[in-house]
Amino acid sequence: MLIVKKFGGSSVRDKERIMNVARRCEKDYRAGNRVVVVLSAMGDTTDDLIAKAHDINPNAPKREMDMLLSIGEQESVALMAMALNSLGVPAISLNAFQVGMHTTSAYSAARFKRVDTDRLVHELDAGKVVIVTGFQGVNKYDDVTTLGRGGSDTTAVALAATLHADKCEIFTDVDGVYTADPRIVKNARKLKEISYDEMLEMATLGAQVLHNRSVEMAKKYGVTLVVRSSLNESEGTLVREVNNVEKMLVSGVACDKNAARIALIGVKNEPGVAFKIFDELSRKNINVDMILQSVGRDDTKDISFTVDQEEAKNAVEVLKENRERLTIQKIEDEVNVAKLSVVGAGMQSNSGVATKMFEALYDVGVNIRMISTSEIRITVLIDLEDTDRAMRAVHDKFLPDED
Ligand code: ADP
Ligand code: ASP
Ligand code: MG
Image 1: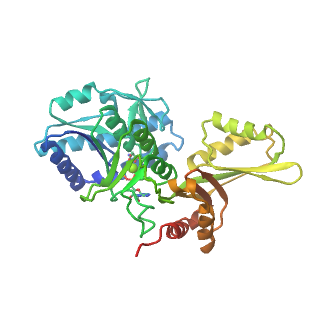
Image 2: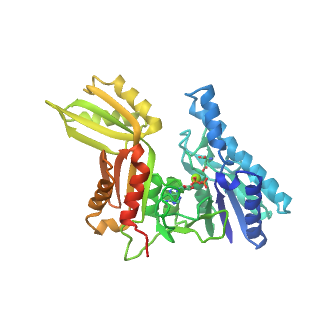
């Protein structure tokens, strides 16, 4: 059997944890399997590297950021190869360049285009455990790229898909995918399984347990994922195509504290204005999420929307530069907001889900700033300070404790 095993930063944060992972990999290897291991950087290494960079230059070029951040994963794979070696298991570490993990050139947000297998297969054939750096790739200029925060999950899925692995296990610091972040909602429940679509929504809406692109890719290539703890033998959660006739109305609640809201006040109420505004933003690769338009005074309208916090400054600058042409009277921005979402495939055939969510928020006096929906989710924008209690209230409403 060919097994891809991915371990996150907390699972390799120190010597004890590294040896723990090495022993888990040894077990699979000695049972006769071909084992590919994908690792994240140890503990808070990536955050520390980012802080170091910002200390020197808050506007560091993205290329250099990727060059810097990629060293975290290189450290952990080399140490893991040494750990396995100390257990008498032949192992080799490879970075993205050595494997040939080719990505687009977008620094800090690269996507896989192609993964070479020659070197990987050669090492596996030689009887070695192969340990690959997560989170990084190489672009057509032979430069190092990274996949975005949490991207090691996507490296694991890309390898599992390319190598037609029999199993792709994502080991982390919780026992699986829960109905909400178990650190915030204490009575959240572990799910036995969740569909790709629901998991994709959860991941995109802030449940960082899986990188959203890893789920997208798993769905595309039909890779079943197992999310489980690196610290115990608990079964974990399966992420795969689920065809239950009785779909759960709501399978989870997610929150994203990385949102910013931008409001454009007093925009001319005429055709083409929205197009020009959002066209300007998309030309700068700024991703816009929730959008709300409301009637303003006189012959104007107000348009508000959300972006990721790190894009907010950029977005405001772009709009300010083009303020007259875009007929904007005033620009406001705020970062003390969060997105709260409920996700469930069963929503498609049930009405009243939105009402129930709004009621839960009303019960705890949380104000809703914006609303957006898709077939299988409802998202509201709320004040950041309300997030945790709003999340608990909404979770209790849809997923009350079972007696
Ligand atoms: P790793 O370093 O292993 O990649 P992450 O920190 O990226 O781990 O993801 C695991 C974390 O995701 C958990 O510690 C948990 O707090 C958080 N999380 C958020 N939402 C969920 C959820 N619905 N189920 C499980 N974990 C969640
Ligand atoms: N080390 C990277 C990060 O902290 C990638 C990962 O953990 O998946 O975002
Ligand atoms: Mg992660």
